[in-house]
Length: 102
Image (cartoon, rainbow, N blue to C red; front, top):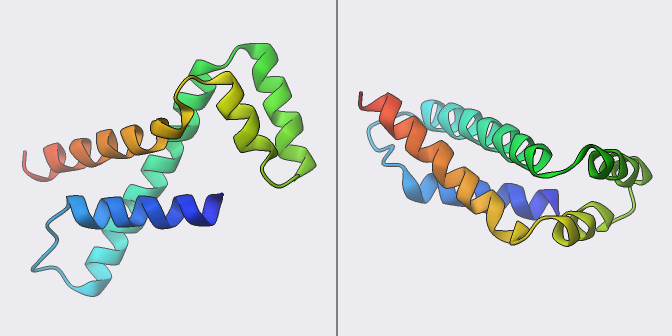
């Protein structure tokens, strides 16, 4: 899940930003920081949507490291969960553009 999500996030960021004129190192740094911010924002959004009991159950699922268990749980608890990462990533990109061009 995470490898695929990571690839999708990176591609979404690359497609959404005009980073021409920057060095490869600068582009990589911006993409890395945006990906970190997006992942943090996604995690915060998930936690905001879950009850305390659901958070405890999620923690148990994470600790089992059973493949797909976390994703399955989140899909069962959060309506339209599959859309959440993309929406949060778009918000993160908009925030970056606002700050970059302010």
